[in-house]
Length: 97
Image 1 (cartoon, rainbow, N blue to C red):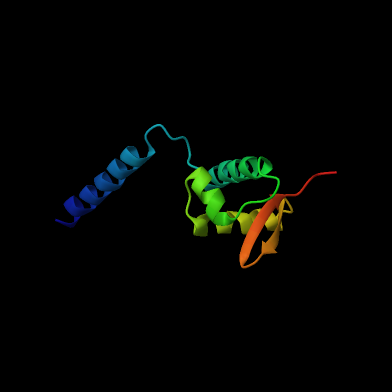
Image 2 (cartoon, rainbow, N blue to C red; image 1 turned 30 degrees about the vertical axis):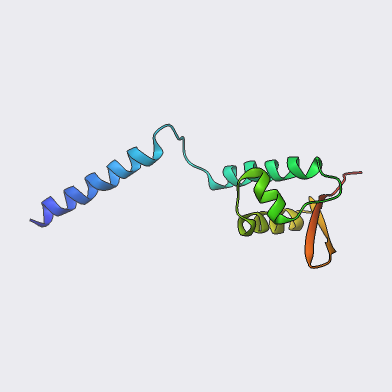
């Protein structure tokens, strides 16, 4: 009985892998992260006066909270900076000299 249960569990894990990984080669969350960061930098480079996390999220289809996480990473990497205008935080791309 236990053997049959283990085979069924193994089968379900294999099926889950096939369904969710079809067409995907070794999913890499860092690759996805770098793609999103590239999109953010691209959007920001077109808006010299800066954008809020909310505005960036609306343009690339992410929530404000998710964008804020990426902005924090980009800021730590030195790729963006920010300034405050009232209570809002506006982000701009750091120019490489």
